[in-house]
Amino acid sequence: GNVSQYILEGGIRAELGETDKANAAYVKALSIDPENPEAYFLVGRAKFEKGAHDSSLVDFKQAEKFYVVRYDRSAKFLFQNLPEFDKGIAQEIVKHWGDKNEEALDEIVKVNLGFDGGLSAQRRTIEQFCKTTDGLSRTYYYIGMVYYNLKNDSLALSNLLKSIDLKGDDVDALYFAGEIYLKYRKYDESIALFKKITEVRPDDIYAWFYLGVNYTQKKDYHKAADIYENNVLTLEPKNIDAMTNLAYVYREMGNNKKALEWLTKAEKLQKEQ
Image (cartoon, rainbow, N blue to C red; front, side, top):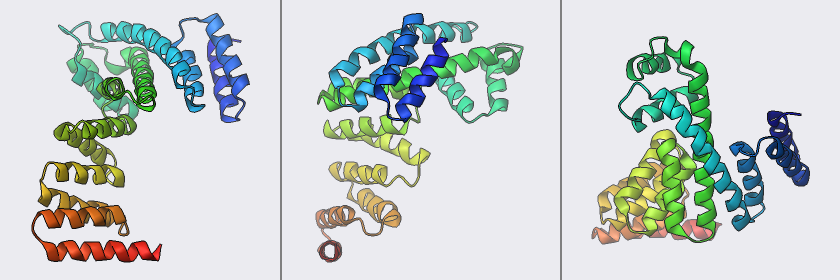
């Protein structure tokens, strides 16, 4: 068997709940190709899902190491006609590849990257670059989540931000990074990340909720009230937490009548549950 067959087998076994057989397949893949980042990533993820955080970190770090080698190699080739690597263009490429927007990709390859042959001539390289970006981004996300579970917020945050740097619309990474910023009382940074989620997923109630919390902490009560009423409660009219928070916000704004209204609504709903 070859590496990709073993990795595929591992994935199927994992989905069937045959964890040991899945890991055996990944180990076979690594015995053929000891520098295969995907195999390390999948072994790490299997351990992570079992709650073996310390042990999974070792595999994720190996995945990171070998993904970085691949990433640097394909980035160096793609950006050879530019004075330096351009993060903005890299994110555009990954986004358009994900959206299967061939026209936009062709334009970037010709105009921004300076390859006359366009996408058709560079398809293999672009595909490799996007796959590696995806793999490295997921690896940073999981390393971040290992540290998050180990209650090491600063290392969690720095790895989640690395993930976002590679893929700016990764909702999970945005969410947990936004939450840590909020904990650190870095409200503007937190707001920027939760706003990004609402752009990608306008009906993400938790992202709106955390925006409301951030604006409340910033004492921007009008903005907070607007978000709770017109976003959170529009999406989920029986959200008791949003009602309770609204009562607090209106009280801080000196509108006790409105505060009591929301508090009464919240209490009534609580009794019904």
